[in-house]
Image (cartoon, rainbow, N blue to C red; front, side, top):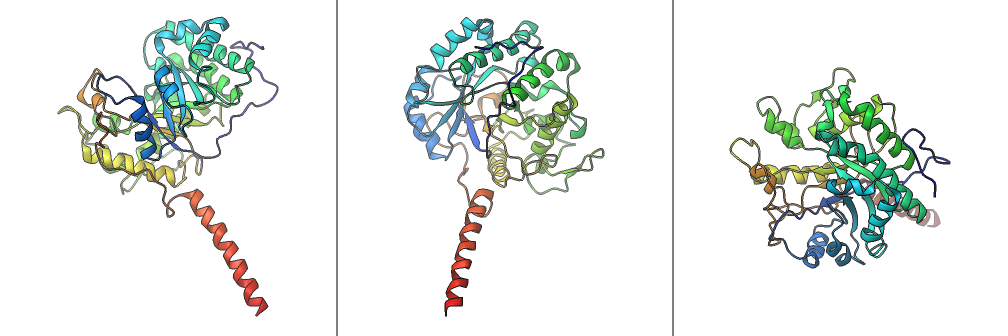
Amino acid sequence: MKHFLVHDFALPGPHLIVNTSGSLGINYGMVADNLPTPAKVVSIIQSINISKARLYDANQLVLSTFRNTDISFVVAVANEDLGSLSTTKGSLSWIQENILPYYPATNIIGIVVGNEIFSGTDTTQMSQVLPGMMNIYNVLSSLGLEKKINVSTAHSFAVLSSSYPPSSGAFNPTIADTYIRPILHFLAQTGAPFMINAYPFFAYKADPTTISLAYVLFESNPGVLDPNSGLRYYNMFDAQLDSVYYAIAALGYQNLSLEVSETGWPSAGDTDEVGASIQNAQTYHNNLFQHLQSNAGTPLKPNKTMNVYIFALFNEDLKPGPTSERNYGLFYPDGTKVFNFSFKQTISSSGSLKRHWNLKLGYLLVVACLCLSLQ
């Protein structure tokens, strides 16, 4: 087994885990005391046409329950467990306990080593993330699983010190060179995505008088021009993603893929949480899906698809913080929808279905022409 160091991480060639198209997934949070059993959750997730889920740990009951379903999982090493990955032995133990008993019957496609570590102040945890990612990757490689399961870490949007206009996107200088650049190097070598939690709601909540509600909800609006790039943005989601692309490029990496590990809109909030409502949550989620289904990409990266994980599956009653934190769910704990939504593909807006029908129509035209020529 080859071991990689931060300053000497090399592979025989680019080691790419290729995703041919983006898809919509769901964050399955469990900070609640009233959620349905994992067995019931299987049918709930299947009922909304979603086939990817993300956990914030490697919950053994969930992973065993979802065996032999069509739902794939991204699992996580909890922040408090990062120290256990400081050695290859510790990482092997984590894989043996949390992955191997369930894989491949449960389709585990990714491991997230820590969540939003670099927007905090714990430098000890910050220093543990990349070594943990490397050790987990080394273990997967020794098992022949490095092409099946990618390794990354999830970031809060707060890792950017600048995001407006998008072309000014830059990582916080206190973490950029010390932590982020080496992680980007790791991701570039392994083909894993840079994972970002993107919430236009937070920006709107902070400045509702300046930021248009239509702009953050993917509704019709005149757009916002980036004077440096000349690109016009018609929704904040794209603007946030492009600011991340620019920040990554500023550190020397042009071709990394992004994955939105969290995005969503709360259906309720405190009096000072402007915009948190059932109507806005419904609009955001349905319009987000239509936007992703169009395969339009972003202004900077047109036609580039990505995986996007909605936060979250359920309202979670034990989450601390403002009221909105307990109201991001698509479902109430009893399994009923918080608002009406549909994640089913339609022929009119799905690029893949359009291509399918274009090919079929082309074939029919050829047959028709042949029939006419034989008459």
